Image (tube, rainbow, N blue to C red):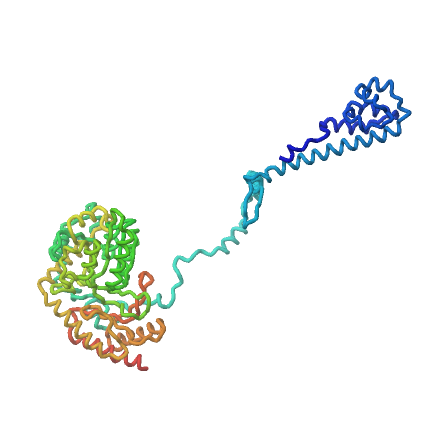
Length: 584
């Protein structure tokens, strides 16, 4: 190192420099005192003394007492004084320079160290470690200091009042626009094929009363008997003394009707779907779902915390591609449960890309193709039959009967009983293991009060009536065909639903280019049909709860309870009003 290679010619101690300084200040009138005081320190520099002192003076400088007694000071006072001053300046200058050099060498040593060099954008930077350590020490020092805190004082009443006046609470709900503020007509009687609105009897095509069981005499008698025997509610969950014998009878009746080993009742239709799905599918599992499933299923998918992948509505190519991708991605995964979730009959279709595509309400799932893909890729299937039960198939047993698929190939079947059976609640049916698992782990079954006994009794009676009267299915299909024939002749309107679906969906043949303008036209048609023709139909809107973008259109629910004149009246009324609205 540089500071090690340097050998200063004179090394003076700090006390020596201090002594020299004091010597200058203590010069007495007799200049010889200066020589006496500095002689011991100047002996190494005897060669710088004036020649007048002679070589013998060197010996005397080492012995100040002899020098004091023998030196003739007066003879060389002035010349020696000058030489002595020069020597002192030389000594002090050398000491200061050596001290500064040594200090700089110590400071620059960490900056010149090889291990602390860095290269930034091709430029060599030395000493970054030293700087970082220094900055770290500064930061720690600053953090250790107490931050300044203003003195605490209580707020005055005036300041509190001002803060309260300025505070604006966060809104509990978003601002409602005119579309969300729509209030549907209020029914003043039973929601049967005919109902009363604003004191006037109208033909009802707005209720999913597919078999016309609303107000059926046998259902009313069954409910009356159950009310007299059991009362209204059960006042307890099924596992906590809320199980009544009529619940067990209803579960056995459903299983027998559908040809499954066992079934389980839920007290609410939607709770069936968003309780059954999380009971089987957990976090880390895979669910492939149709993107047109209703909100109850969507909520169940969310609550399961599973990985959910949607495929295009009723598109088997999209389903196959999705299953292939998932199978390839999770090829090495072990203990991974995988499900396909679909509806049998879609009340709400999915519109993702275009607001007026062919994906509308009333579509029927191709179950036979789904089963083939399920078996090929080894997935389980969950099928919701809420709108197909009592509607599809020769005896109303749903999509499995309609497609000729054995019910054993469906792992889990769920359904709400508020449509064709004209009661309330829901059920899940399948193998005994599937049902027993839900009795212990399904939240809607374990924690909700059980289904009111009279509703379970009504469900049993409805299934009995359906089995005893298979002509109800025939009548329903006839009404669907007759209505579709009459509606197909309306200019400017097209039918988007399946030909065998009791949900007949109408949309504008040519859009105005604006969803709001289309909705305004359709609402005008529905309002005028109700006001002028006494036919009650509904306009489907896009719900804020549904994942999919629902198309706007007019939806009609066909019932076996409708007479032929009711169906013809609906088609003729819509034809006249639509021509007036679209033509004007």
